[in-house]
Image 1: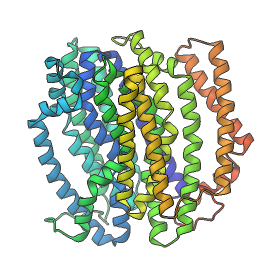
Image 2: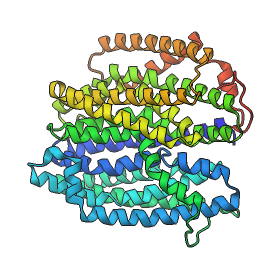
Image 3: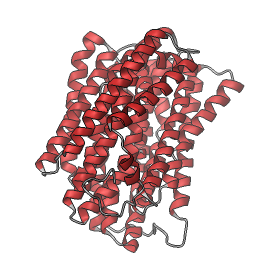
Length: 518
């Protein structure tokens, strides 16, 4: 399958998942609002969602894909079976511990609720109901990494739709056929998330076991050096892959000290995650296997070239997305969330948080893309240290800014943490001699910035003409902004015809220094 078709499939799956996520969160806001029950529910979902987003965006690919690329088909199938068996046992034990200690975990997730025993008890209840999804999605992610490493992308791209689809179905049923208190609605949603995760695991498992040449073989696990390296690297890889998600977890803990702070941060993050999640899925699912092949083949310059071209594409998407979200934050929050239990004050708070988070979107994207090179090299220590640097910056900046700006200051702290993470990853690549932006990269960056400025001026003019756009006008603004940016990108040369031609080349072909993303 060509890289273009693979990219299209993974991209469509990511976009579809994010669109369903938007629909789900709109229904969340309508059903639960942004009060104490919503804070408890969203705080409880923060830990399962942290794991789901990390592994769902290919968080385990950096340790599994390079290992499988070094192993033959038979050995790879055996190692994959051992990894699934061992992780299943470990996750069962972890789930049991969480079910027992949910009260303590609730306090850790939302320390600002320590004086509100009733809300804290709800956090513990919802944690018990929703945490088993961690077992399902992690095993599904391992299976998906095996499929990606062997060039199969269909099931891995479509299976995550089951989680958001299941929650949407549950919300529709609860809102249309039952008149339940908010506490019970949230409990049903927490339980439904676990069931949806089980469906996702079943879809990926069916794809893994399909065909004559099975990609996984189960046996009694043996403590091989390769399995040992997978297990020892698992936690650092998850931490490094999910750096931004961990920053949001820390920010949620701080936001719990402000009324509705958890909810505002969650809803704003979900909007910001649409472009970021797309790039994360493409990076881990497609870029990482390519970089790993280049590294194993000793093609150092080709690896650097692939990294530069990937960064160009990432910024081509991230810069206009960041600008558009900042300019349209208020109408986006109004149209998506302001209905039912979600009031105008919640809209204003969510919009300010979204603007602050959108400032960090380009840096989060750069950190995600460049981290793939460190993973391909097997430099997990450097990737882990970079993630840790970003976390220190996030916590420090959030605490300092929160006292003056509240939840908006916390969001600014997350953006600064993303900047710190991207800077630390860049320094790590420079240390390995792999940070070498070429003239093409710098030229395209200037052209992308120019096209983004043109789009921003157009959106600002439209916003002054339509200060309070409704759903249709917001859709028109988004479509118009995208069209204007596309035309400006073509006019400035940020996108060329050669880029489309290069995308159709198969990923196994040698990468020319002047080629596009490979």
